[in-house]
Image (cartoon, rainbow, N blue to C red; front, top):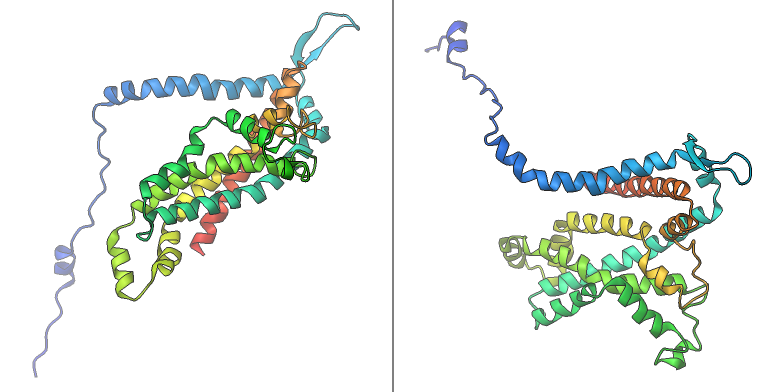
Amino acid sequence: MTTTAPAPSGTTHATAPHAPRLRRSRVLHKGSIAILLAPFGILFALFYVLPIVFAIGQSLLVVRREGTFGKAELVFGGLSQYALVFQNEAFWTSMLRMLAFGVVQVPIMLGLALLFALLLDSPLLKGKRFFRLAFFVPYAVPGVIAAIMWGSLFSPNLSPFTALTQNVDFLGADLVLWAIANVVTWVYVGYNMLIIYSSLLSIPSEIYEAARLDGAGQFRIAWSIKIPLVRPAIVMTAIFSIIGTLQLLAEPQVFRSFSSAVTSTFTPNMTVYATASIPNSNLAAAFSVVLAVTTFVLSFGFMKWMQKKGNA
């Protein structure tokens, strides 16, 4: 019987491969990169960063007068403006109204966008160019024009569908919020559909061929392959929709001319606009900061929740 002698420990260490060292690559053409990024950086700082800083600074100031008719001057007021924000019932009522709006409208809008995107990606649909254009055209209509058009259709005095609008008060206090939701859905379904459809086009066709060989039909492919793979696009459109919901302004502002149920504080942004028009720009700035923080918390929280749900 023969035995194999173990190799000496010294030779083992000598022949063991060394782990490669990760070297940080040197960035070339730093000057060119800075020049190319400069236009974006300057515009970003001027029209995004500086307004935020200015709004925060304005929200920390208060107007004080010496006597009833004394000269007004701005002084540092700390968080006194924010105390007024949290005491303002109209502002928080508008926030709750928009949250209810988003809970109902956003899933319906994204559900329709996903359905239309799946239809456009299906090999069973004929005339894809026509339907792609038809689904997207409403987004090309400015929001103000869309609101005027739908407001006229909902108005009993202007609508051609008087038999319906005279019996159903779409512009009343109970339904006007959902009339506005109809306008937003009509406008933005095509936009969200295009994002999801672009994500569907990036899926390799080999995956579909393998699924068909396994006997999967179109519905099974859509449910088990397409929807899971476009989940990041759906999450992105949902975040955009959450942000847009809390920033809603144009559509309800137009609907004020059609319905007395839409007040000047109907949405948070309308509250900010009405407060700044008094004028009370410092309180309006505090409203804006609270609205921005709330929007960030909701959108970021939704994104993290979806990430945890996807990893579970």
